[in-house]
Image (cartoon, rainbow, N blue to C red; front, side, top):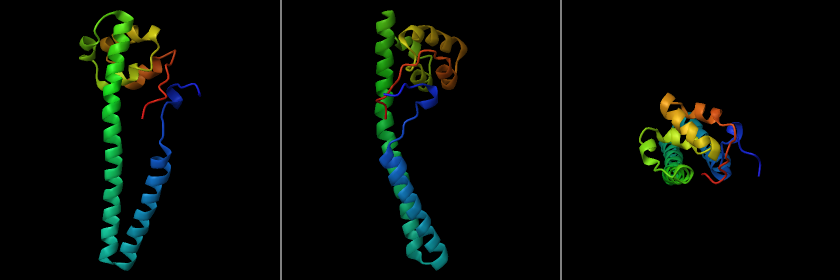
Length: 143
């Protein structure tokens, strides 16, 4: 696998990002064009239906995957911190936003604990946390 780092960690799901959404977007523009050109009520209905379909598909896909992923990230960080320090992560977790916790998961074992302390002390943004990581720990299995 390709080495993962800050500049290439974004992941796409081809059927959704490059097939379903572009296809429904094109169909929506065609239906919208026909609705404006022919002034037929049916084309306005088709356009509205396609827009709702795109929105619902996007929201459901995101909601299910991200809810589960967020839970797993929290559990992963609790386990990792506990294994490294022998201490419970929950007191630290209460001082961090989920976005900060998610960014911290890319830190190597050697960097994690000092970076958690620094994040709490300086209230680092997720972007700053990711940019601060020297030894990036890839996550190739996220959604």
